[in-house]
Image (cartoon, rainbow, N blue to C red; front, side, top):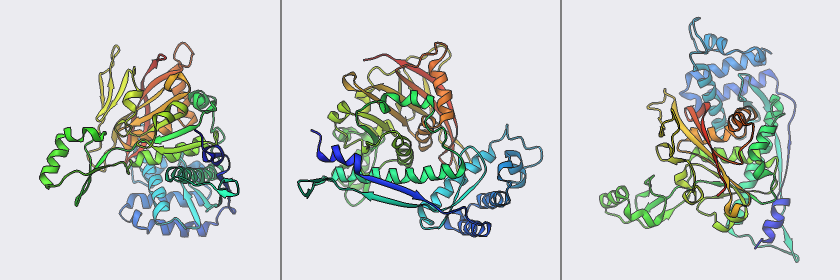
Length: 437
């Protein structure tokens, strides 16, 4: 049964307006950058401090548009004149790390800083802006002169949606300042998302919540191969820990998710909120089967944190396992297993695989999207590939192939090269067209 909250809340819950002053003066920008490079987050990142200072000076002097990968490598990173950006990705890797560090700084040490410094993806030009002033209005539905009672879950969903929508407003502001966003919903993105966006069913973003086991006096532990409380007693690893600690495992916990999943949820919230007003966010352990049957759902994160994935993926030709992607029916020249290769140290990049599936919803009505990966980079890579117009154009071309026909249901494998968990290269590997169940 649809509650008053569900009918009314999504239409009137939020009003977000974002305003900002003109671009900050050069001296104010330099002072803000000095504050950033002296922060705790940048204290041990000498290369990134130098890179940020270099990019700032070039941009405030009006040379930002002329920045090239080669000149950055020579002037900012100390590479020799023989440096070839086509052979070495050091500039792209360090700019990706800088972008991540700037985001981390503003989340932690600089949430109240007046001036924002941003490095939009796809280039090397910094964007400077005064912090936008966001006005968030929460309108509570009223029935018969009394405020309706909210369940804890409904309040949590509203809070999550409020956070995502507020972030979306800020992100749209950033794109406007940097000249991006004119092609947010390209024809190819419409083709990828139309079964969910073009439906009048509710749209739910469901984040993976892996099972942790509470051991009194010691905290939470996890066996990545177990995601069902009924199977905990069969886990050799958990039982070994229980015996070693001489403590019993008392109750399950589904309170944590990965960084890639949380970040991906924010990006998806921003992306989908521009097309749908009734987007909900919930956790896999709270999502009921009636909701899956009645709504369109986007699952996000490792398959081990989505206990519904095994039942929903019946008939799949590609499956995500804890160590990589399994190809159940390899074609000519294809490998049966694509193994993730985590970085061995902080100076190395990692390689992981994302599996994205668009499958029919239960009873053949609506659609389900599953953007899954085992690592932070692969989850983020999946989200970026299906929300970026340029990447979507390449994906749709691969999916249509020689026939020129877009499959209704499909699975796609992407390889994601990451540095410090930030995707720096996302590539198509293979796909399978799925028949209707």
